[in-house]
Image (cartoon, rainbow, N blue to C red; front, side, top):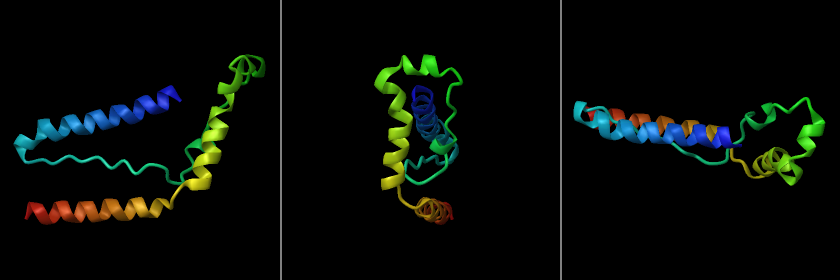
Length: 97
């Protein structure tokens, strides 16, 4: 999960730095962080071929399955995110006129 979380934070930091660095050129930068929405990302989780090594992780080895189960039971419809992004783009376009 470390790589997944690190990549999420890296994108957040990049977008925030763009916000400050590009403002002088009239370029706006925003980031949308919608939370839990149904996507296939956790269904594509790669598992180790070495089950013996995986078993040494103890309870931590259950994290991907538990996270996937929790997200699939509470996740919203990804179309809501797409609609929100579209509204945001329209708002930004209107502001730039």
